[in-house]
Every structure is written in C-alpha cells, then in structure tokens.
Image (cartoon, rainbow, N blue to C red):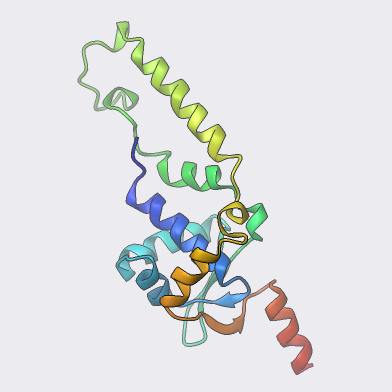
Length: 166
C-alpha cells in the first residue's frame, strides 16, 4: 500500500502547524519545510481548510493554522479525506474495471478487509500523538524557520494578543 502524495503532504502540513500551534504560518514556509511545491501545498491546504482541519486567511497578514486542537484531529479521518476517491485496485472502480475475474474473485474482499483494518488503526491516532513531545520533529521544523508570532483565531496566542490590546 502507498499513500498519495496529497495525503502525505496533508499530514506534514498538519504536523508543521501543530508544532507551531497558535501561530500563523505562511504556505511558502510550510512548503519549504515539507519539501513540496507551493502550488501542490496550496491545493492540500484548500482541502484541509474546507474540511475544518486548518484555518486559512489570505493577504499580507494571512496564513494558516490549525482549525482544531491537535487531539481533535484524527489521522484516519485525514487519510480518508484524501484517499477516498483513489481506488486501491482496478476492480474497486467498476466504471473502468477490465478485470474478467471480478465475479469470482475473493481477493477483492480480502483487500477491502485489509483496508478497513488499516483505516481503523489510523483512526486510533491523533495529530497530538504525532507531535506531542516529539523534540526531533520540533528541530526539523525549526530548521525551516519560525512561524509568524501572530495569533490564529481561537488559539491561546490570539486570545493573549487580544487581551493585551484591550
């Protein structure tokens, strides 16, 4: 089994934002830290934003940050979001299937059960599990440069900034 590049990049971007929780990050810095093109990352960020995983703001003061706290981001849910339309085998997409064995094939059921087991396992993992006290990850992302110290909506940093200006 191999995850799509989009799924892999989505998890990297979420991990980057979790390490920099409460701060806005520019898409370009996330792309650099995640070894991705800015264009490819933008597509992934749009999907994550549309599904509530990230908050994204355009413009000079814009950026991206987590849309939910790390414990509330289920990795299996993210995987399903990006992988659901990608058939694992040809026979899973009946419109384009050319395999003559489908009516008698038992492998399709075994593959489906294996995929279900994979997703069940991934649903036991949260973003917090991937980043909490992961000091090596902190180091990797610090090499890419710090996130902007501007608070994100709903974060402790944003609330603290609002209180200090009030």
